[in-house]
Length: 349
Image (cartoon, rainbow, N blue to C red; front, top):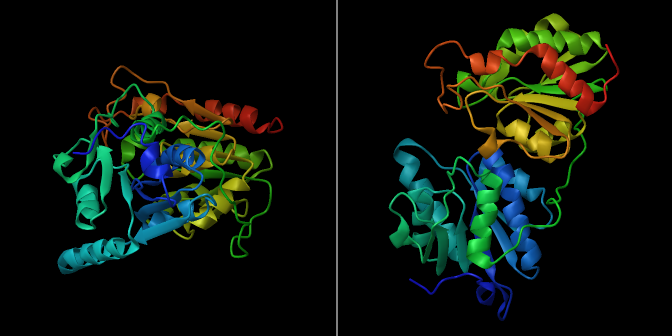
């Protein structure tokens, strides 16, 4: 193993600009929480060539960051094509001649990719038996329940390269809304789904009540989410037409950024869209039930987390083992509306 990397400035600032490839997380919310760590590296090493290795679905998030030099996107195949797609990615990385690789995920496979790609310096946390694949296996606990994941990523950047926390939020370019998304302004965006499971989903009858109150207040409602979440969004929106719009399953990540950035406000479960809205500075109400806001609350200067946990929360389960989902039912539509009204400075109903 190489000598301890920290402060590591000799690796990134000596001679010609070094080429650093950062393997990004695989989920939108985690990717948003990783941006401050990447921004801290960029500010500390302005001459660095900074690349990000990321799933194709999340590539546009990093492409919208003008301070990222290269985005290497990939899509992995399943079944009999699984090995071929991974080997194609590894060969592609070999040809790009990265000098240093930093792994934000804890997975064994991500470390194996960088090892097989022959990236000389490979940095990541010691986890899942992958230390032998790394040149620098760091003792940073990315799963600490009492530490926000953003701060854990910042600690990893500091332990790797001596980077201090950035003094400003990472900038990102926001495109205008495309013509295919015609929306009457002003509107509130709702994201009622959550990929993890029902323990993170506010009850549908509460979403209906909130949406009714918003439209009664003269606002339009836009519902976003994934394609599997579209039926849920349609069920909430149907009684409110023409004051409601459903774009679930229709937006690219770039288009979602546009829709969120133009929103008067946003309400969502603990999901990637909620992290993105808060990051963009949209007045955001984040609904937490089974998960731990100390570790994964969205961060933003106009974001409010609503969390009223019973003794069993946070359980981090996909479904409530008691079947009551009290952690979410204790958050009433009236409370959500009042919080959004204050954050977005909505006129009284």
